[in-house]
Image (cartoon, rainbow over all chains, first blue to last red; front, side, top):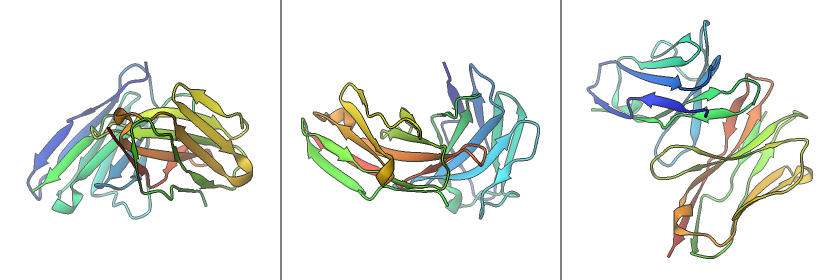
Length: 115
Length: 115
């Protein structure tokens, strides 16, 4: 149990375009999901906390207008990178918080390359 | 402020050697959780252990063991008789229970096990 999927697993897009990444909890409901970004050989940096039915909470330094987060249901959160630039190229990982467990279940990640 | 320090950036060992990955944390909370995750080259985070701040018992799971020392704010991870498949980046993380349970990750330790 406690499986989280991400789609797509990798994507290449041109500079200036927008890309949407989906994060789904497959066998449980998650009121809270998290979005992380990981640059090569670096740690995971939390970008935002996504709460079902409300606005996401962004970490300091993360542009909310550039990284749009929507958590419209208890099993789906989406991250849209708008007007992508090469510096947005990174590994994006989502996680879903299990109810009452204090444990986050991580998705397999999405590798974004902006050319 | 919460912080996780993994001072070892990279460790190389030969197969069958024992290796210990260090993790030191800082928090003002009295209740918190500590985690270890493994990130193989594929990128997907693999959950290894979660430890409650009130439970200082050491834990052993197969070749893996964890030493939680509250007095020194450390949560070290030992792999006994290492194998090539153990090669990965290992992250220690601390949960911020006062802030939507978000995880604070250390910078990770890259372990390379050579045959």
